[in-house]
Image (cartoon, rainbow, N blue to C red; front, side):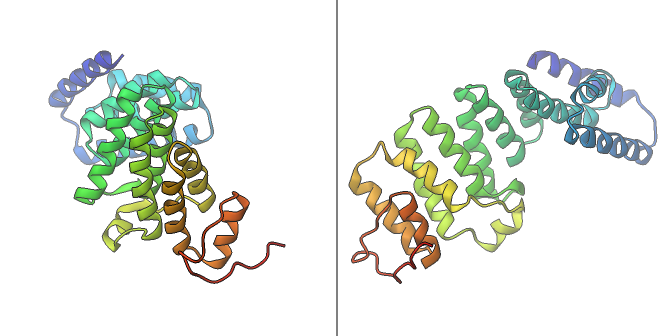
Length: 250
C-alpha cells in the first residue's frame, strides 16, 4: 500500500512539472475542493469521501495528493481500517515533518497495535514540539498522555513511568508562553484522565514511588481538586504535603 502511494506521488510530481495552469487559480480550486471533502468527512459520508479522494490520489497535483492522503487516513480510521490508515499517515509524515503528522501516525499505529511504528512516531511528535517549538493542533500534555496510554498497553512499564513523570511536570506547570502559543487546540488532560492513566502505570511500581507521585500532584491542586483524589481512593499524607483541608464532599 505504502509503495503504491509513493508511486502515485511520483506520477503527481510529473504531472505538476508538465502543468501550465495559473498557480492562484489552482490553489483556489484546491481550497474549495478540500473544504467540501473535510465537511463530508465530518458528516461521516465516508463512501463519497473515499471515492473523491481516491480520484485525487491518482490524478491530482502533489499538494492535492498529500491532502487526499490525510482525508483517506481519517476516513479509514472512522471505518476501523487501522492498517490502511497507518499507510496513509506514514506517507504524510514522510512528506511533512510536523508534530500533527507524526501524532496522527502514532495514534493510528497504536489502534493497529503496530507499536514498532507508534512509539518512535510519538517520540518524533513530542521532540518537534519540545525542541523546535513547532506548531501543533494538540498540546504537549495531550500528546504525552496518549503516549503513556500506548506504552501502558504494551506493558513498557519503565518507559511509561518516565513519560508519566514528564506528564505530571507539564500538568502542574502547563507550558512556557511560546509552547502555549504553538498549540492550536490547547487541549489539556483533565484531572480524572490523568489519575486514570497514573493508576494503571503506578500499579506496576512501588508504593513509595506512587506516594511520591501523588504527593507531588496534590501540592499543585486546589482544595476542590484534592477532593477528587479521595474518590480514586488516593489518600495523601498532609504532614508531608501541607495544604488546606478539603471540603466535605456533598
